[in-house]
Image (cartoon, rainbow, N blue to C red):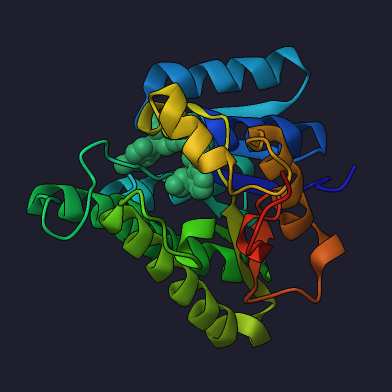
Length: 257
Ligand code: NAD
């Protein structure tokens, strides 16, 4: 088991990447703190872990709120004695997100509050806990859209993920000598609720698929496997990276027929 005796805090653990990662980390021996605004989904994740013989607890947290982020870290330390892995994964893609002309300010502000400030607050309260544990691994979920532009506009989301990447790099440099590694996970387009709600017609789905060399959407499980690598000591010399797990989409100029 690759995460034996480790304590992992995962935001957005009620569904998608967060849930699959929580399940995998628990199978690899970690005690998992599942944080989310979706209480029913988060509790379901905890139940799935418990049913599989693993250890987990749910904590309600809106990552855009400082008090909630402080509390989720406190729950990790009080329940399991320490924090070793922080997965800042919660994020939204608002269906109203559009180009510069058509994106409303409230959509921009909400996207930044959750996707960017949420990562900052997770680190603000999580890093002192990782220091107390003698170091650890932080993984921030960015996206392939931080590296390439899309003609299907989602300006607030794309901008928020760019901020996650630059924040990740600077954090990695600042904390490198403290045995704290900080990496971004950049998923490609996935077959999760978040994206399928956004690409809500067959035409929109096909428009995205045509750009992916592998010709399919990724699975949340495939992101969990990448997160496990970044969380575990297998990646002990890896920090400040933008780890692409995207079916080749950012490498492609022209995709095969
Ligand atoms: P998802 O919608 O299945 O899961 C996101 C989770 O975050 C949900 O459980 C939701 O309740 C939670 N959440 C939303 N707002 C929150 C808040 N304020 N505080 C706490 N939790 C909150 O989507 P997913 O695909 O698993 O997304 C996880 C991450 O991956 C996100 O950061 C997303 O931007 C990123 N991502 C997704 C894709 C994709 O194609 N699905 C691609 C690239 C990046």
